[in-house]
Amino acid sequence: LAGYTITGIESSLGMLCSSSSCAWSFPEGSTTLSYWALSSYGDTSLQASASMKVDTVPPVLTILPSGGTPGENGWFTAGPVTAAASATDDTSGVAAVSFDGGGSTFTASEDGVYSLTVVATDNAGNSTSGGVELRIDATPPVVEVLLPAPDGEAGWYVGPVTVQASGSDATSGLASAQVEACVMPRTADRVTDQQPIHQRAVIVRAVGPNREYVHPAAH
Image (cartoon, rainbow, N blue to C red; front, top):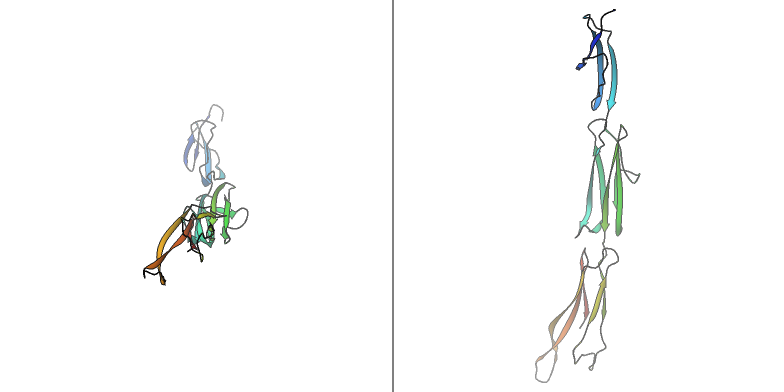
């Protein structure tokens, strides 16, 4: 009617604005809004409605390894090791979770480092990604020992003996290598004064981040 104006817009969720036009942001989730105009005459317009689904929050991703035998420094000393990924999304729900475009689980059995990327997508199209690294080394270090030739008779050393030793580990790397010597009696061999002859047993110990290997190098 002439002389009357729109004084506001009211809705099923309450008053939207006190003017003839306004902007209103739909909240997160699925919302149906019914609304109508108020006039200075005291009447209202016909009711209209609008529905909107809003999800601006990406899924929450969780990655958990399981299985295998845990070692040190994040290594597993035996497989198989399985990484499982899951996700939650409170609004539109989870559409897919995958490791590098595959399934939601990945299993590794052989020695090596497996760097994986996981992507979770919700039904609105939001996505989140994460990574996990599986490290398996089931092979102990390799020990190499170099002994000089005996300088005495019958395979005996009669002077100081220098033992050279080294270790290597192709997967996780070598943490340390050391040479130990111990003295053991040999009562089967006697000298003229009837005192037992002693021999030195050289032990080389190589330690990797995952395990230790002891090598009895020589006597």
